Image 1: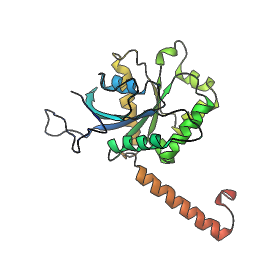
Image 2: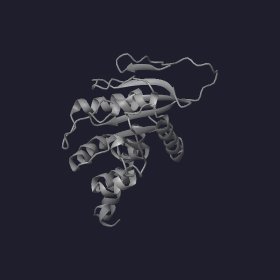
Image 3: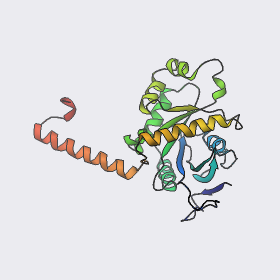
Image 4: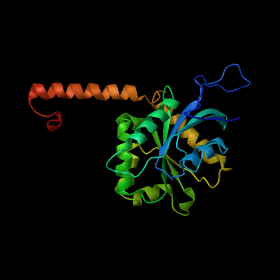
Amino acid sequence: MVFVYSKSNLPTNTCFPTGNDQVAPPLRLLIVGQKRTGKSSVGNTILGKDVFNTWGGKNSAVAHGESEGRQLMLVDACGWGTDENLVPKQEKLELFNALSLCEPGPHIILLVIPLLYFSHSEKAALQKRMEILTEGVWRHTMVVFTLGDHLRDCSIQDHIQTAGRDLQWLMKKCRHRYHVFNNKMPQDRQQVSGLLDRAEDMLMENGAWHFSLHMYSRLEEEWSRREREMQERIGKPVKDWL
């Protein structure tokens, strides 16, 4: 059974029926990415049902369900635009709204990228959006490549090696944590179980901690404060002697 809500009708205490008295807390997945990347289709493929609007909804949406024996909570964030110099205010608000639907925070952030050429302008636009979430967001981010059928006889490793510096930069930022999806084959549950296995591995690597914008913002503020203090003591920027 799958329950879907948008930010406008999400109840304060969402629950769903189960036959067990004790249920493991759901794995919380936040799906982000540019518009028209197959982002919502990734959520549908994971849950095995058409629960998210694939025609570009105006609001972030959340769905609870079970997939491959796991209880899941998926939030499909509104897709962002292509502006590489400025993030519109509405995009920022929608990103924060998507985070609020994942309270207390997403365990894993699925960054959806089409398996095509990852351009420098797309990299710049992505950087601007991820900066809003602080540098700490990358510890919890897995890249999900859509259009997996385009690989054909090429391996994903070869594609990454030949795709250029911008994609290699992205792989370094997410610590080479990625998964390939073919949304044209939602019946292929092996690709879903593989993604969920990788997500659980990441969760263990992070000590079972979820992403918290508040926590990472406070850490960045603390590091900035210490850097200012050190600069005042020695009279030059910290980066000059690190």
